Length: 458
Image 1 (spheres, rainbow, N blue to C red):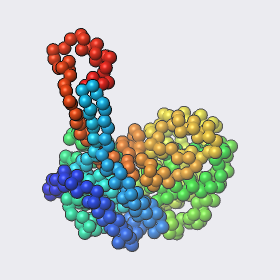
Image 2 (cartoon, one colour):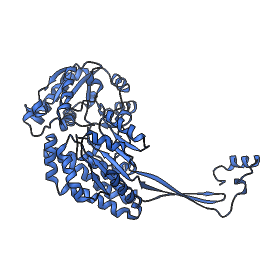
Image 3 (cartoon, rainbow, N blue to C red):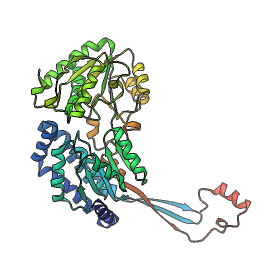
Image 4 (cartoon, one colour):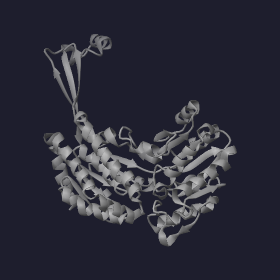
């Protein structure tokens, strides 16, 4: 069945040059219709899967996708234009025309934390590139997954876009097949398995993985506004965001001040009992709930710590006195537990981060340009965000992705178009006459001529 879909998609992609811009734009318009004509159904599905408030669901899932489509629709005509370069040589003139060609049939494996956005965002890039898409949404977000399976066939034939649902076994079976490109979003552990499966067929991949995103507050950057942004970014989607601030580093002398400001801001957002707040999300399933709860033992709960397994609820939690080398210091938290770690100097924080796996993003709150530059230059990460959290990921002009353990490859905007296409050069040359010395038998005189005229001789 899937092999038949692959053949249909590969056949279509081979002829996509003839279809050109019009067919790509039509595919994007269908995604737009899929989102806008069923907006209330998507909001209901996201509420069912993750207890997302409609405002949060629309802002972080639907609007992000619509903005991406609008940007690509505007820019795609220029991205599709062939790039042409010419050179003058002694024997004539040569020309290289480079065109971006689709890979063919692309497998997209989506996660559960933003089950709509992270399913359709790579699909948008793949379709803009002229590929066909087979999407495997996450079984851990069943309402969104089922709605994708139900609605996509109403807007796309299988040769363009096909959805396959199922559990982990289905995902493993899909990755064992030979694809033209694989896009995966998820944990580094599963990403490594996908990478290994793709390597058996020498299939190119793009991996969007996780990471412990540090958030460094330097004294000049401490303010109520900074704390408000950090608390929002951390507890959005109940902390289940790959780009959420994972650990906050604060000047030691400001620790109590920061903690009290954070505590006040949590209450301002979610009330004294976040369990009752419609604006606060839930943990996706029991296994993930249990994992997050184990982190509580790695420090002292300063605020929060309340939980209910029956509701999939873990309250916004501030953790202090974390145990060096404990799991919360080495593993991505991916939940609503925020370690707050004091430091004596920015240099100490930099030294710590230089020996840690590369995260998706480093967050810096500072008004000191020298400090901003020092951290950005000396700490590796997929991106750097200064005096802001999360929003870099929704800027279509920014290539989004990790480095090292946090990912392989970039997408969003033009980076998506480039990720899902490969540059194919077409070489031609006008040769009014041949240079006889170009061909054997060779001589020392030819070598001398090559050294002198190496850029122009052929």
